[in-house]
Image (tube, rainbow, N blue to C red; front, top):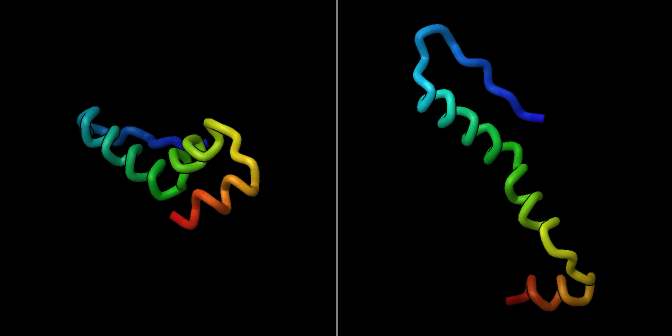
Length: 50
């Protein structure tokens, strides 16, 4: 689980920006999108080729 500690005198916007960068780097959003709908392996092979 990703977390970001807010530094002293840091704005919420900058902490949120750091959090989004960390989530993107960890690949969490990509994994969530991939797991949203199950794709059979044959469909996955067919769709990845496009």
